[in-house]
Image 1: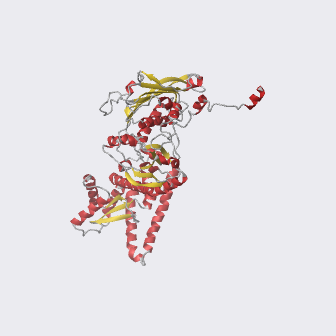
Image 2: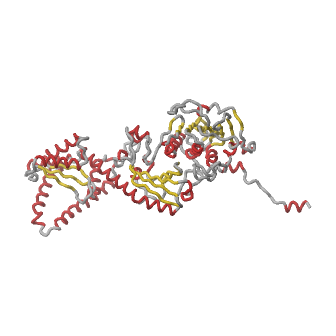
Image 3: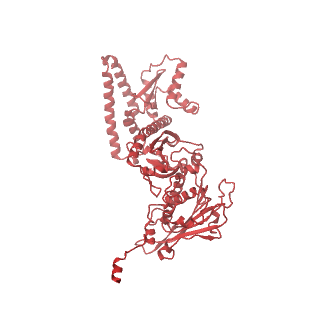
Length: 597
């Protein structure tokens, strides 16, 4: 009889081995920034207007592999989150640390949905989580905790809520309106709120096995908070990290950015190149493409970096603006909270380019469309499904190409202005001036009256992009050069097939070079750049390559001139004298400028 019972009884098992499951779930894909974001999300959902984050550091002895001596290293021991939200009800509190529980489970009108985010985030960084809370309208404080070490030992099998006297004395100062804020109650205690403490933190060691240094991790957290919650911050949500108020960072530069105002002395905003909607199941995915202010992108190669890429000289104007981070990245925003900021492969036309750092792209959507963006429980990933990706790709083609074109044109305008200001043609101009002493005087433009002369000069200055009112000295300097030198070279940039334009005035000539012409861009400019560089920065291979292009370019220049003559039925009659004069003056100017003295 006993043998039959043993044979027919069904074996059973617990659903999970709690301790091992929790340990396995610690590696769920969170880093410090995204893990902290889960707590901030909960605070915002609880109607908090203030979140204060504080890290507690200590120095620890770290044993390195293969070394007999341990070395001292910084580590974050605890992370504390304080908010002035509605708090957590006594009967709900034990469930707040329970995996899978959420008062908003699978709802699409808020930030959370799956009921695992905050718990997985916490255990990804720490082995113990304590929650202290004072619900709105009450005077009683409650506490609950989860400790992985106690779970492993079997001494914690349940999560319980208990009444406590108040918030822990070590952190009670965080449950106050911050002194640094403009809040009318600054320094007073929150009427309600929640304090979350991550302790036994074991994943944040300076130079440890889990990544970069502590300060770098804190910097990344600062950037994340400023960017991910930018819309909320713009509406008055206050976030503080280690006593410092986090101001918003909008990668599209459409919102008022205090750092931009501080660095540039004025409120600079991007231009919207294009925006529009893609409709899915009656809901809209909204796309914006912006081009950053001209002040950020005037100089090609500078990159709007805090430190110049070559000279390493600091530029305080770009401190805290993170413009290089924008290169090719898409900001995907769900219910006004950014959940993704990275490159989506093969989305931009012709791939990601250096100048894309000045282009902002935002894709925003309601949580009802989570499946179309493949949103995960870790709010650090979103990837459009194939059909939506293709629609996004098609939408972005025109604005991205226009933005890139505008950036290149602005660079050309700046380079042109800098060339004229720097007098890059001065050596040749002065050589020609010397040679002209023994050459026949020019004849063109001798009969132009004074009023017309002044109009020609004003038009020339305007074409060069010089504002006579804002830069009267520069305008006057150009006028003086044109009137004194026999031949003046200035730099311009305009759409068209002309290599250059020539203005004749009182027997003198002004050549305006078109820096949008392919010959100028591919032959002339590389040569000018090579001549201006330090020899230590130029490789032999690079110099030879530029010289080869110049050789081919000069051959093409001669041949293009020959073709231009060939378009006439009688070129010798029309251009014979021109050819002779050109050769005669080229000979004289070359001897003066380039012959050994």
